[in-house]
Length: 267
Ligand code: ADP
Image (tube, rainbow, N blue to C red; front, side, top):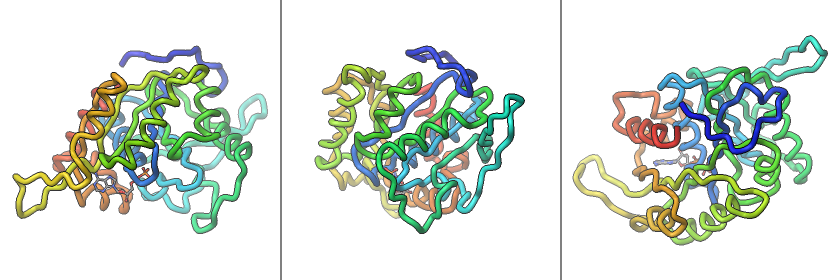
């Protein structure tokens, strides 16, 4: 495992974290949390010490995707009297989600600065210990939380998730361009094309490109960033997410290879 950190860590609780990797998308619903969760699972299964922060403040998915709805992290006091949040461990991953601190059925009516401060606390005030990878599931789009995270922490790189439709690609282009803006300048590790095609169980040889073909690949080429692969539309991905058991955990599911391969390219 090599360190790709571009800025020095700022000490404090972050000093044991080697690589912070952002998972980002232009739109919601394209599979950003699915990729973040399965990437974390694959890295951990490969023996890397892995953490996952769910910074998607308005739609946190990690509690559901890890079967932790209603879970509440505990805390401990340091010798200096500082209170540290203890990430919840599941499937060998240290997890924190803004969803652990909010009522799952209530909206979070926070203005930008409040949301940004809450996210910063997940980084600075948690007991992360030693981590090879801290994966961050960002909110969709380009907003306050992106600016806060990219400017406050030493980020190794960003993985961009898109689906192949033009409406998704248009927003993904903006999201990708944000990481290249002066003052942000974060390496883009590549583009993942999710929901790339559908294969019905009864016609396993047929691939239906229902959202269009190769949109993510073309986007990666136009920005000269790596294309990290395509993920088909598969029922077990949805079920794994809804049941709190990401597909990458199941080595018998061929989809787990897709996410293991992705982890190999990102690590
Ligand atoms: P985002 O984080 O971009 O909002 P999610 O990862 O929450 O998106 O995915 C939205 C929904 O689509 C979830 O129910 C998820 O399980 C499902 N999903 C994501 N990718 C796939 C896929 N490749 N095949 C089937 N379902 C998927």
